[in-house]
Image 1 (cartoon, chains in turn purple, green):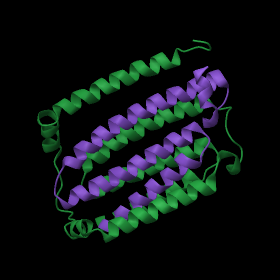
Image 2 (cartoon, chains in turn brown, yellow):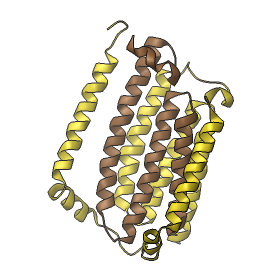
Image 3 (cartoon, chains in turn orange, purple):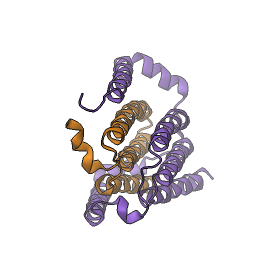
Image 4 (cartoon, one colour):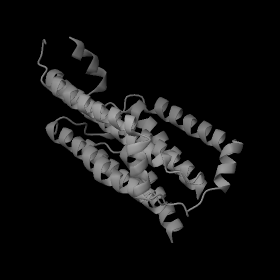
Length: 98
Length: 168
């Protein structure tokens, strides 16, 4: 069971990494980051189960807060980019500096 | 019963994550992302972290998914039509993520610490919400304050970003 959960978490993280590196749509990239963090959360909680500790529960709650902040800022930049540059492509994001 | 449910939920979450990565339309990607989040929270619940699973469903799946859906609705006319258009360099990304998976799997399976931990994995330990809350408000209250300041900063940051106009 331990290894099934660890491999599932690693697969989810790898898929997140694939999305982060390959997608052009900013929302897909944000979803990729979320998948990586979810995989890490799963590894965290499975390892904590072996120690009979609830420390991972608390840490994951803080990770969820940080993720929510990252998503909110990311989506604000995405909507700003779409409004100003009329594009959803990550490659055009640097033109926000102008 | 719980073991088989956990296995089913974890396999389904991987399948849902694959669907999420291979969808061409952003609304489908968001849908499968939501399904993945739900399934991961069910895994949390079946392995005994009930409170965390419920928090994940209520705050994370609820809050984050709604934010994503708002962004999708606000930019509904802007999307790619075919899967090939959504990728910039898929082969390179596939190789990197596959190497990441292989290396991390190899390191974890060969690690003595992880092998010892795998033997100690138990279903018996179920942390109560009372013990988690007590620890959160006594041992971890500085981190709780930092999290609240971070959330406040995020709200202000988002408002400032969305008020920007061309040339400002």
